[in-house]
Image (cartoon, rainbow, N blue to C red; front, side):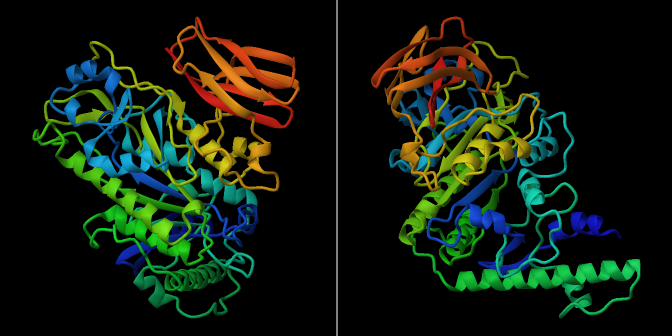
Length: 528
């Protein structure tokens, strides 16, 4: 067996059976450059938590377009949530009543929502769509590597030889649960490794790295023994971190009642315990709700989908409360993703079928607590196969988090997230002023920047504080293409109000970019 094939087929599948809270944990190697990049030796370490909603979450019953409710009810009368039971987020947008705790987090500035997220040329396949979301490549490109794995491969083409070491003692990413994410799969090998092997493998190879014959098979045996030795060290590091912190929130349900809360409880404990891991991957399954999505009772507010959303809502609430009590809340942001949304029309089985775009939820004290993008448009008479079109490419969210949370250079982001459309537009999912680095974020932002009205129909006004110098105001679409150059000239110091003509533009989401010297900012603008 070749070394590359061994890691691809074995390392990603091995898990520690019961390490913390009765849950299996799989870990992946840590990059010292990434350690230095994120400042992990200090209390300002940045941690990203990914929650995969497996099966394709029904976005229209999660984040509900109240301004489209008449058409929504007509399209899915047997599953639509009764309007008087929808919890309002904003005047035109509501949320499922099972997510009351997420609404409270939104009201308290710890939740952001990104509307109509997907990818071009969507496929309705669970497997294909999951591969696309985790690999972050175009839908017509076959790529088995993950976007995190490509980053690690760029930094450490020789991994895993020589790791862990004194400079990089901890894993880079941890997947909690039985499903190991493809996000950190490298182009040739899994850029990480499981922290434990199967029991039969441990029985075969135990202890240190013994001398093997100087033959091709002996070389592979030596390599396998090195893998085992490394996994044992990572297990010790995780156990030590877990011993240094205890969960403090009383909001966690009893173990086993909420599978996602059980996972996030471990994440909070490890973060507070000083583990230098930067990315955690959790998951919640069951969202493939072709039938029995609702049980028809209480205004369609109960049923399988409501139960799952209740798990998500309760888990996020307890997690954020625990991070606050552990005093690490400003170090952690997270986001949900699902392979696709559901179709506009419901089916006769009180369910919904595979669709395309849907909402993403970002969470944490450092997120921008707004609704990014307009509500999806529900046609008067949608066909059975009609889907919600994508307005924001999911890779734009990845790119923005890499840029703002981890300060990855744009040139590297372009390599990690390749696309036929080029660089993805900036989506400000992280709140201004939280970017790390030697230059304060406030000095990089255009002051007092706003766009009003928003949404706009014919014209909006871009307002900002100018320092006096050359200014560019550019309107871009969701794939980053310039559609209008509003201003490109010197402007006087003081408050500037620039009219932005949006007449003739196709309805949808755009981004208004303002640049003045080293100061640059962007705001989303919905065009009706």
